[in-house]
Amino acid sequence: MLKRTVFLLCCLLFLPCLAQAHKIHVFAWVSGNTVTVESSFSGNRPLINGTVTIQDNKSKAILLEGTGDKKGIFTFAIPALAREGKMDLLVVVSGSEGHQSQWLIPADEYLSTQPPVNVPAQAPATVDNDELKEMIRQILSQELAPIKRSLAAAENRKPGFRDIIGGIGYLLGLAGLVAWLKNRRPTDLSKK
Amino acid sequence: MHISEGVLSAPVLAGGAVLTAVGTAIGLKKLDYDRIMTVSLLSATFFVASLIHVPLGPGSVHLLLGGLLGLILGWGAFPAIVVALALQTLFFQYGGIIVLGVNGCVIAGPAVLCGTLLKPFLSGTKKQQLLTGFLAGFCAMFLSALLMAAALFLSDHGFMKVAGLVLISHLPVMLIEGLITMFVVSFLIRVQPEIFSLN
Image 1 (cartoon, one colour):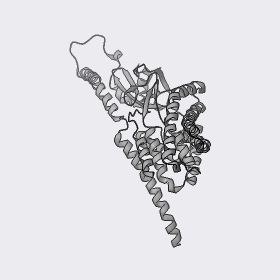
Image 2 (cartoon, helix red, strand yellow):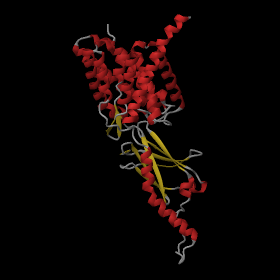
Image 3 (cartoon, chains in turn green, brown):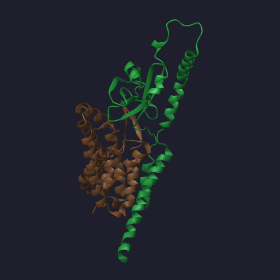
Image 4 (tube, rainbow over the protein chains, first blue to last red):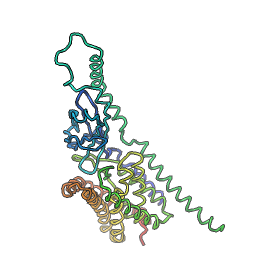
């Protein structure tokens, strides 16, 4: 009888394995003067209409707010205020049911790219070193954006089979530990 | 069902932590240590059931099987659920250490309540047993959703809107949870009635 119960409970454990995490994942990347924020549940299901709040990481003052679109994407131009204050931007995304996640954009990440306003109106015939560096930086940041994104995605992987089995192992191990400790007690008492 | 870190206000977090500590203490005190393996297997069942997320509407939902744990373990469901939640927090960053108290209350409270209240009806006729199983699953999920909405409300998030959303999005899950609990309970009563420790 006990065997059958254990078997049933084990079957229950492995019911369906269409794991879809209940946690919001946020990645934000800078290209030029705009920041793209992508939010999703793991398994790449976009978070629709999530509320995106951009804060100064130090003072937690809200710089701007918005709503993600159907693909979970929200783009914004870096506020001049943030640039002046060299603020680290904290991107906070919240869903409706108490789920919330955040992503930090350090000031260095966007300060290295100049806002487009600073580009001189007349293109000089010769490109000096600084401008060349700036151009390369911009192109690089554009080209690297998808790589940054997939790196972030790889970091946020959903719980796999190994994690689940590991968790079950922990729980059974804990039970074993408790059972062992409980069984030791009576013998200890009888010695005293 | 896992509320994230940074959403709730401090009084709600503290309240949840206290309630969960008390519930876990009572659960551990009442735990029959001969049944420790049942507790851990059910804890594992909860651990896995609440990892499996089904996309639904704008969000995604998952089973809890709180009613089942409550029926079988009574107060023991409290530590079983809290331990599984703690592991989920450590492994997958679902919820968080600080909100563990609130999440524990939201899920384990209704599980214990429904389990303890409905358990006497398991000794009844076959029909009563089926209904009890269904109600345990359904009501535990319903109350959990309500508690979650209350926790969000107390932290200033517009109760009616959140409550409506949480309840509507969980309605299908309540039904599924009710049905699964019903089948598991009726199967267990057939093959292993001792697990419910009925007289």
